[in-house]
Length: 201
Image (cartoon, rainbow, N blue to C red):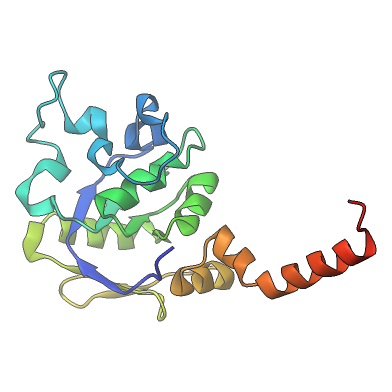
C-alpha cells in the first residue's frame, strides 16, 4: 500500500444520506478479487443509463469533478454490506478522502486498509465543505493527515479526530500484510527454531 500523502484537490459534493456499498459498487462487479479496474464501475447505476451512456447530471460525470480526489458526503456513508470492493472502487477511481458525519463501521475500517482516509466531522463543518465543493473545480479542499486538519478554499480549517494506530498505518503505507512483514525477522527466527525442535513436522 502506498503511503498517504497530503491531498489538495477537487472535492465532489454528494449530499445523499445512506450511500450504501451497493450504490458504491453494485453486486454484479464483485466477481473479481483484483483491487484494480473497478473505478470505471464506481457508482455504476448512478453514473450510467441502461445503455451504458454517462448520465450528465451525475456529479462525477461533470467536467469539474472527473478528477475529484475527495468526496464530501451525506450521513452514514458506506452502509449496507461489508464488501471490500467498495473502497477498492473508490481508490481505483482516484478518491483519497471521504468526508461525512458518520460511516458504517466495516466500511470505515476497510478504508484504512486500502489507503483511503475517511474523515468524520460535525454536521455544520461538513456543510461548510459541501458548499465549498459545490463551487466546482475552482474550489480546492486540502487535507493534512499529520496535522489532522482539513481546509476549505478560503482557509477555514477543521481538526478531525483519528485513531493513532490507523493514522500511523496510513502515513507509512501499512496494510495488514505490511504490518505482518514488519515482523518478518521474528517470524523467520520462530520458524527456524520450530523446525529445529520438530523436524518431523
